[in-house]
Image (cartoon, rainbow, N blue to C red; front, side):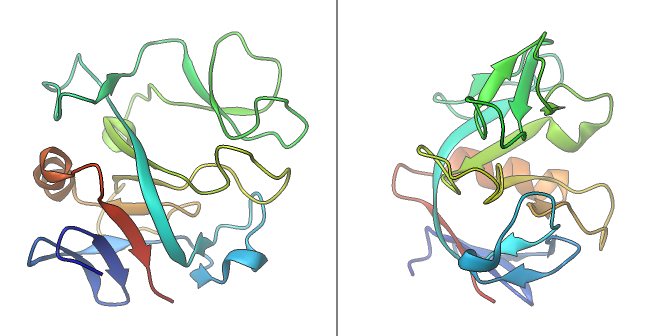
Length: 167
C-alpha cells in the first residue's frame, strides 16, 4: 500500500494522508471468491481504477482522462448478456443499470477492474466508487463517499492508484 492508494477499512477511506467516511455494500466486505451478482457484498482485495465517468451537465471534467456520461449510457448487470459488466447504450434488452440518474449518486464514478475485462457470469458486475445516498447508507456492493470527498479524490488519482478493500 502507498498513500496514493484508496484504502478502504472499517474506519473509512485513506487516500494521500487524508481520511474520509465511506460506506460499503449492505452485506459487508466478503472474500472475492464469495462475491456473487446481486448479493450486496463488496469484494475485498486490490482493484485497479480503470475508468472515471462524470456528468458534464453537473460538473466540470474532474480529470483529463474522465469520460462524460450521456443520456443513453448504461451498465450491463445481466450474466446472460455477452456485454455483462460492460458499459452499453440504450436501448439494451438485457438487465442493466442506468448511469445517468436523476439523483447525484452517479455524477462521478470511479470504475474498478472487478470481474473485468474478462467477466465471469454471475461473479458480480461493476464495483464502482461513487457518491453516497447519505452518510451510513449502504450500497449494492460499491464503495460510496460524500460527494465532496469524491470530488477531492478524483483529480488526484494517478495511473497507479488502486482501490484496496480490506475485510
